[in-house]
Image (cartoon, rainbow, N blue to C red):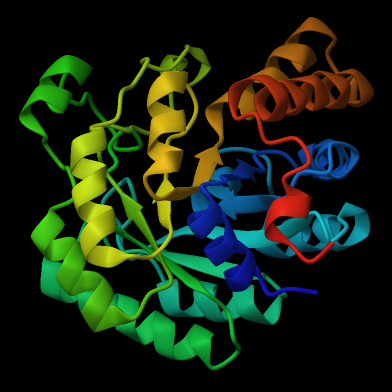
Length: 303
């Protein structure tokens, strides 16, 4: 069985994307895992700190337990998403302990988010995580730039954000960052934004984001490692597909799958089975109609 890092490199080299679905509620694990297997599509189940702190994922240990119960590793692996050094509320996080806990729990890859630090501090933290994770042959994802949307308070109007390039990943810094840290995958900001996770806005459709493809091409050229798109829900499809041709190998999907699950529960309160069915349909739609990656497991794994 191929390592996750080998699968990700295959995806990068072949222009195939790996969808990564955030678990906001524990019953979401089973339908996502089963749909990936049914459609012979390789994907990731992932959980971020906000899924636990602000929704119903409960704990990293609980998600790992559900994953081991329902997932077939030929089709899906487990990713520890967005362990921030400083969180969206500006608070310091015990990131070392969380990374180490994730590795002990059997997560197949980890992400450290030092994007709210200075450039040099971000490098130092990423290097430390690489040292910890690579000892266990666990790939590391890190973020450079600012994928906005999770912070409290308003952000710039989207068109102004895109036009000004506010928070976009610097090409020059990306080259240095990858070279000095030896990370495996790089999360970038090129017009993508996170969906809101607080207040009324968390239930609203996301802004239809775009991606600066020319900027992405420059980042790919100087880094030559798999690129990750956070805030993948709601991005115009044409931009995503063009991005996949230009280095995006992993796309994080949270808002769309969470809202599909939550809306089904609002329609039929307490009916978990119905919510799981609606979630399966949403995942199937994304795989077949949005990303067009059914049967991708045969392209990027050793099945």
